[in-house]
Image (cartoon, rainbow, N blue to C red):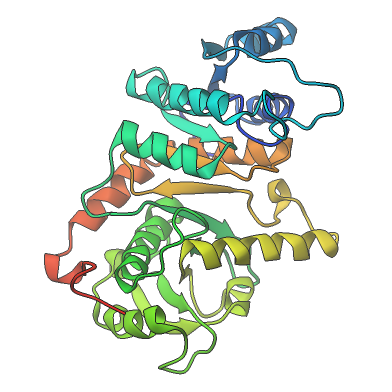
Length: 335
């Protein structure tokens, strides 16, 4: 764990089982990282209730940003599953916007939310602004693999599968692998249904030659088409590029396979249930809506790691470095 104080704004209303699971995750994260400070954003009665039960040494590292009011939840109703529940779209939207506002005000360094991905991406894009090089922000997850971790993106930021979007994801993934994980000359593959040239749908067939000619950040090398098992093996590519729809399906399929096999949880080596948002001018981590407390703690740890490495600013600078000819646009590359 890198040293250095970091302040994370946590969306108390994000997630299917919020706020209880978010509170438990916050406590886990505080216990694991003595330099971590949290700003809990949500209904004041929830946050204040947590403060009252914290030990004094931990309480000093927790602050509250009241947002909205907590409506009552009928007994036996899962949060977020009924009208008026804690996880309602309106309340959840207020809390994630409040977390973004906290960073903009200088009260926090990063945002973590397990709420609606669309609401989180929208709040981040509107609040922080998008990078000029990125039209659609992407979610990036680091997957455990036999030969070493594999960076997978997009895993749900956008369902668009245009060639230019895939090419942009390749640059994002290479820069993220270098900035977040210290990988030199990351190998980048494009997910498809076979490794031979010409395999895949129109978008992949069009993106493949573009990536072969592209100059990727950090000496990234395009290794061609890869298949789903390459994400689990990790011996062909350090970065696997796909669209958000396919990436999200793949990520959740791997999660299910781990659970069925009795494998480790996200906090102990299993598939991540938290992903970094790339393409906005702020550090944002989005956790799975069904995340458990250890998943939330893992997401908070990821946000702290990214801030301490100044990863988001580094990635933005790396993307801005290549010439325009290396940055295809939607009008330059068509399926």
